[in-house]
Image 1 (cartoon, rainbow, N blue to C red):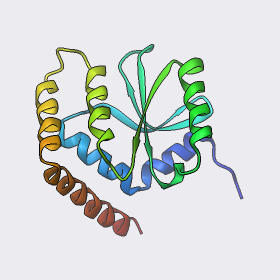
Image 2 (cartoon, one colour):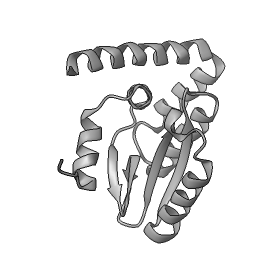
Image 3 (tube, rainbow, N blue to C red):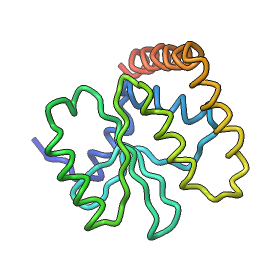
Image 4 (cartoon, helix red, strand yellow):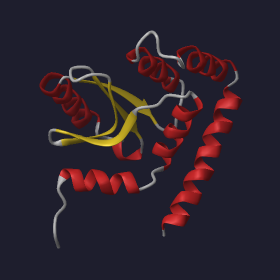
Length: 155
């Protein structure tokens, strides 16, 4: 059996539909946050999402789902290497999503230029979700259904 390179594996992951990634992408779209690439290779690692503002300013977003349970030490080492060797800041979001998601979304928004046209809309959407978590979870359940349909159609 032939082994895949990191970039081939990243491409494979992009074609796969993980519930956490679909839910996160639906949330990004609801906030009109664009330009975040999924499953990008950085050195020996593949990060879940990468926002590249400039050559020197990059933000990795890691969605910590079931795969990451019991891997806290490995994740911390990986994060240190990404930050110190590759100059990539990392934020972690636990899945299923909880209150840490709102802080992570605000941090992502802060990486954009202060003149970014969707800043106020995105911040108001996040504030509305915090005040009415039911609306937020309705968006998440919509993402779950979308993910089920995409996985079913991929077979």
